[in-house]
Image (cartoon, rainbow, N blue to C red; front, side):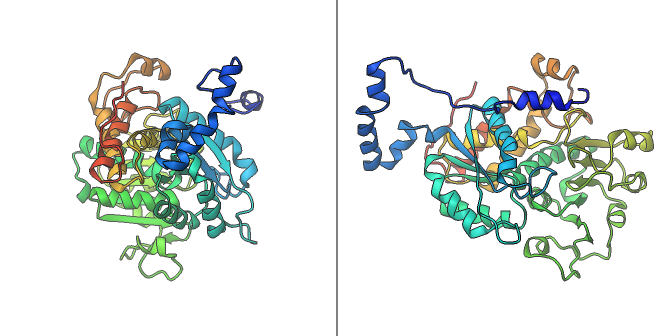
Amino acid sequence: MGVLSEKKIFEYHLGGKICLGLTKRLADQRDLSLAYTPGVSKVCEEIQRDGERAYSLTAKGNLVAVVTDGTAVLGLGNIGALASIPVMEGKAVLFRNFAGVDAWPVPIEGALNADGRTDVEKFIERTAAISCMYGGINLEDIAAPACFEIEDRLDAMLDIPVFHDDQWGTAIITVAALKNYCIISKKKAAELSVVINGAGAAGLRIADMIKALGVTDCVICDSKGVLSSGRKDLNPHKKRHAANTGKRTLSEAMKGADVFIGVSVADCVSPDMILSMGEYPAIFAMANPDPEIRPETVKAHMKDRKYIMATGRSDYPNQVNNVLGFPFIFRGALDVRASSITMGMKISAAEALADLAREGDVPESVKKAYNRDFEFGPDYLIPTPFDPRIKKWESLAVAKAAIEDGVAAIKKLPVYQ
């Protein structure tokens, strides 16, 4: 892929990455009368009479708000709502390009406490206030632990799906990769010893999802070491996953482990830690842009040992990236008018991605985009974002799960090409 120059980056972003497109013609007086006054008043009255008609008479049914306060943007941290806009535009681009979902950035200013952290009450109030325009809310780049309460309360409060991508997006793709690792390594989820480094939104939700998959031996580390039951400094979200163990450091936790999952910081894992892992380990080093340990380093030290490597980057095999999740999850949720995104829908999304990677017959367009062949195995655990089959597989699985879980207003499955 090569190094991206600053000049090319700024040129790409000039004028922004999104704009308003029109779905109807506006060319003469008649069109103007239909689009605006006097015709539009009839539509307003109809929606006032029956609020459900907003889904068919406005853009609401295919529109998602990408809402943030800019407190945890990428690896940049608390840069504020204004500076977060390029990332929110980027999410809108991915929604539209990969799944045909219209999305719009909603950066919220003035929802912080005096210490610069998220004010949960203000954030919830302001997001709820704009929600009537949208068919779904994608929460983005909100610092933990406020993000947990915000998602839970908005999901309970609103009749549209609310999904915090930083919590669940990476978790869903990680589960897909983990399922296929189990198949390749011939290990069962219930038998795995898993170490997660990073106890923020992503790390804790990965733990939730892999435990739902059947994993019981899971140790999580934060910047102070293992989340052990003896620690007195854990917030309630970390405390849920505290392990009854004598291990105190990441290095100790990784000895004999089957799986390392990193959602933390660059270069925090040494070759010795990798070499201490069990037979045929999986190393998911997903810190961006620089992983916890580089694939080249792992390859140089593992030599003839079997292992599976994944990162969050597109220039290595097995990119665990949430773009495989949120566009297609919302596509399925919107198409059956789901009121929530349940754990069943999330598990179904992960299973669909895992199944698709094993399906074979990867389209030529995907091979061309990556200039390589694809065959299920250690270097191809999960599909790539450019695989056009994902919508049919993942979105359909999500829609079906929504109906089965009783959160869908439309009971008929959508048809995807």
